[in-house]
Image 1 (cartoon, rainbow, N blue to C red):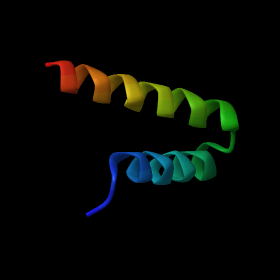
Image 2 (image 1 turned 135 degrees about the vertical axis):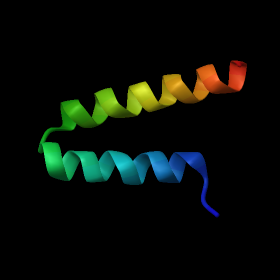
Image 3 (image 1 turned 120 degrees about the horizontal axis):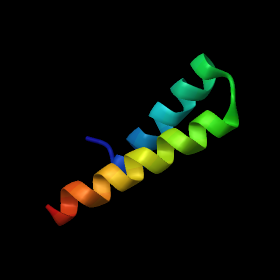
Length: 42
């Protein structure tokens, strides 16, 4: 089992490969981070 941050970084890397930009990677990571925080807060 892996840590959420590991999964996030892996997903971001995959996104970077497919989308080809660091900007998209940052946006996706930000969204995932916010979604994670929101789900933890309920």
